[in-house]
Image 1 (cartoon, helix red, strand yellow):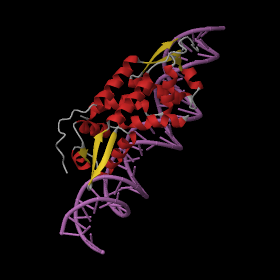
Image 2 (cartoon, rainbow over the protein chains, first blue to last red; image 1 turned 90 degrees about the vertical axis):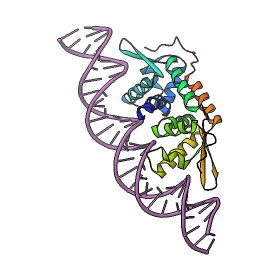
Image 3 (cartoon, rainbow over the protein chains, first blue to last red; image 1 turned 180 degrees about the vertical axis):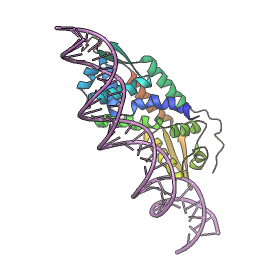
Length: 102
Length: 102
DNA sequence: ATATCATATCGAAAAACTTCGATTTGAGGT
DNA sequence: ACCTCAAATCGAAGTTTTTCGATATGATAT
């Protein structure tokens, strides 16, 4: 039961940090490699790597290697999954509108 | 610049905790008062109150008083706002697809 | 093979989040 | 006015997240 929600936590955690949101905004304009992302952020290299891992784990960002460099882009598929999750969470299914407890 | 993202963090934080996701699932079937929510959760009264505050601050949940009791329900408006945010975050606007740095 | 460079990982410190029990607040009931 | 009960707030403890500097890994170039 608890593990059921763990998936959703992993996804939405992507959007719960200002640095990650800034990274996502940068990726909106097209794929980027880590060094490019680093330029506009006020964090160290290891911190960026940490955030990119969280973003990739969420599925919202995809990465691939090109030589020494790691490239990142927004994953359409991952975003679609996030949207579906949000839709599922927020859609009411009024089964007991009348069952008031107090 | 930082405050721009703070809004989004506040919204998505609602979905980043298993207890809060469980609360949201309970609210999907209709409005509930705190005591009803408490029954199905393994946390104390003050912790529930803490989570409800985060949910209400996000806008995803709305609350109102009925006598001594506080009632909660999913806010259609708040959910719509969250969806729009997610849409905005994940929609690519390919302005520099060619600008590869490395 | 050695050196170099980009990124990932590690370990520890700092910051933020979550939890609890105790107290406060605020609405009703007597 | 006083008591009771539901929920909010407080302060402290426990847990998780984020950060950094140092080191490891892995690919390329010399």
